[in-house]
Image (cartoon, rainbow, N blue to C red; front, top):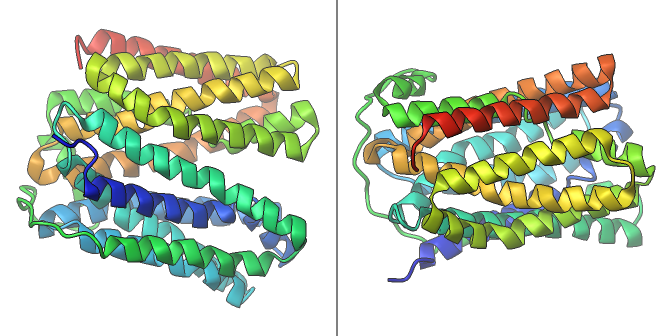
Length: 387
């Protein structure tokens, strides 16, 4: 039987082009916002609010997808919102308009994420979930590698032309939307949760299996201290003093992540999600301890390489693991519940990391996160006999 189906290929390409569009703007957005008058505090508040909006909406739209028994309308709308948000950033420079544009982009992610992951889950058996989600993550991350490289290339030839990049990003963004129209779907079993308000997806936790609850508890504890990769980039800049070396290390991380995701997914299907995920956690703990004491640029690149392996062993694997424990009629709700809570925890993690960094230094920020990863490792080791 063919494991990587036409639907998996198309959804993976959709994610790749969407990530090219988003990551084209990754090096540009902070600089552009400062140029049009945003302070560093203002940028932080803006990004915090819009990412929280996206995060909390994932659960709602996941449950709505299960209620309707369809996935593609949510996938189409989500990617379309993200695509049109790119040129919106360049049209006006008013703070409220920029807030609307960034919210539109992040809301698009909230609308599509759970429905897309449920659609991917439908294409797999329990024995092939790892490689399906690994393959998708591989192409998604490839887009995250291509995007910043294109942005740097464009700015090399056209320095300071930030607005043009926002229009340029619309091209891969709209390609991602058009690709979705190549897909068809059958209606799915309707959610057993019934209708409710915006936060009714939280009710899923009550009917979830004990295994799902334990898994999500461990994942969210980890997320609560797993801060944004921005802190890794800040540390890299602190060590090397070079923007170009820092960006090169980040590109290496994305390349390793992209290349390793599918093989690691195959490994997870053969060995079990638990073994692969826990190996990733140990790697994470080692990498963060390394960042606490990183003495040179060479070791920095080694750590970013290992960080790419960690990401391949955990991100897609966690989604696959969750969908294997979800009820068929509530798959998008199960994914949405986790991703909503994860987004809130990640926001809190960044606040905690920033406070610790400011208060007692970067070394303790990374050591604290490393310690929590070890605690989560022990939790999973003692909770799951096999998975």
